[in-house]
Length: 450
Image (cartoon, rainbow, N blue to C red; front, side, top):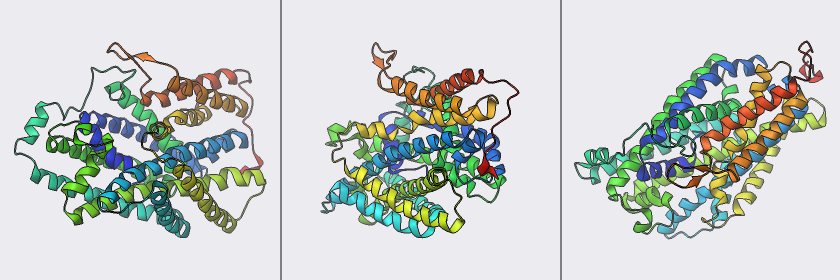
């Protein structure tokens, strides 16, 4: 549920509508990456009795890199989920307007944030996990109901027609592996490394795994959820293919839609019975709140554990940590609302940048973890320089480097490659810098490990 935002519910059907099932190749990569995290990183976390993914970096390299990684996580999460929260308001506004309710984007954002903060503040991680689970039932149940209703409104030969049109194509071995995100190698390899970063180096997901009773439970949850996510993607892709048959393959613009992602919301509002429309709208809101709740909880945890206690240079007792965690939950909620409310147009390109911005920093985060595990000579200064250099290199590739797209034009590097690129840069730069140190130099011990 944490991994699924409103954009998954709305945009994955659009992917299938405009293309095919090749999106599922990413899910294959995600599963491979989860297995690696389950057996390589999780035992390290549980052995260290950690509450933050970045505490491992603190124990291995020092407080400086732990703080750097934590700040990077805070900024990345704010950009990605702040803009995701705004993007949630877009289809909600469209759907509410259809029912005669006219709210501004900032009003929708504020209501969502206030409702989410209430249970996040009062119940902490336990409330977030349980409410997320309930919300997942709502949006998956709503999607299944929508699929059933769709089947009843489609011609009897819709499946055969879609199959002949290539809408159910799963593997793509012909597209450019450099610029096409759904080329087989790009999606599987890039997806695997992305999942290693998102589930092994991002506090949003690592926090979930550390909340399990023991490392074995955590491993089972991580790997099993990979299969659940793949089935979930398949469900939304199927809905997108059914919508393609329902709208007879017409382009969204031809249907009077301002955005491609209005396909599913338009069907929900105009073609579902009132009660079912409400269920689907609730599902979309539930997906948004599950993402926001997870972000608030992980941001407050990382702020207190990785930054506040380090800067204060004193160990707080559990009661004080809890009080500070609640306070920072409120602070981050305000920041999210202010940040998301700064945008008022669906045409702002920064929304698209923000939704994939995690890929820009994941390589540096995962690379730092692997540098600590694989390069014994590496010290804090090596890792910090490599970390900063990696983010700079990836941003150069994102915004300024173009590659031939195989169709006579040029395009940016496919986003699944950003994380592997970052990992390679971190390991190369950090590894080369570490050669300055003698192989026999002992690892640094920190006073706060006692």
